[in-house]
Length: 104
Image 1 (cartoon, rainbow, N blue to C red):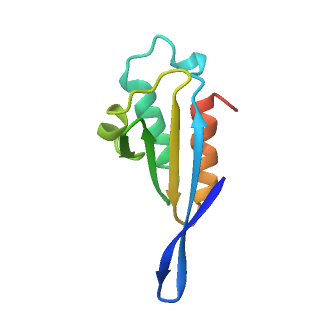
Image 2 (image 1 turned 30 degrees about the vertical axis):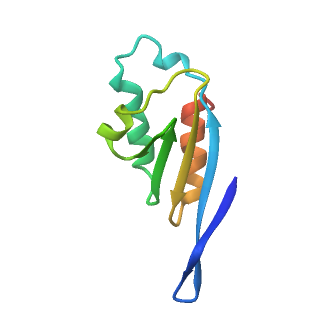
């Protein structure tokens, strides 16, 4: 997990969590319509208060947006970067990592 300091606002550093994850498509996603994994990921992301963004290739989207998530080209072995900013950022990144890698 990488923590980035993005500057000072009101005497406090702005810090966000960021992690790169390699996707291992879980068996539960095989044979499912293309929108299903994106919708499931939006559901996972929506459980957290933090602002969460996912980047795959050159596409950077809000993880809580179904349209944004459907714009990503997820495939087994893809590498995505998850960035979260908020009170539960580390937990949010861990939750999305577990979903994307099929960890339970």
